[in-house]
Length: 158
Image (spheres, rainbow, N blue to C red):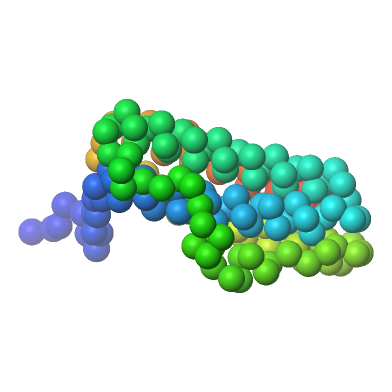
């Protein structure tokens, strides 16, 4: 008899686990984009501004996660604040100043990779979601992450 879902595993996370994972991920993303913002500051202030806006979007998602946690009455386990030491050292040290077009392309490729990873992570969280309130929020996050990916991709191709 054939399997209903061949070679597939379905994982489901508790809402609190999803909120914690999403908040930690957004905190890391915020720091990635702040680093990219700093990297472009000297050569391309407009690009620096775009990266700053992507960082602000992460902050808005963190606020939405905190609000959702409160409405679901599970805010005790969800930290949307951050401690400097909670951010991995490689993220804190990631920025280098962009001084030419070759370095700009390299940093944009790195930003595109970060955006792609973030999109994939949010999609994975969405597939493991079993709570309607979280599913709606995560769907919106996936759409936003897709837009961020497209923006960076277009910037890299110009």
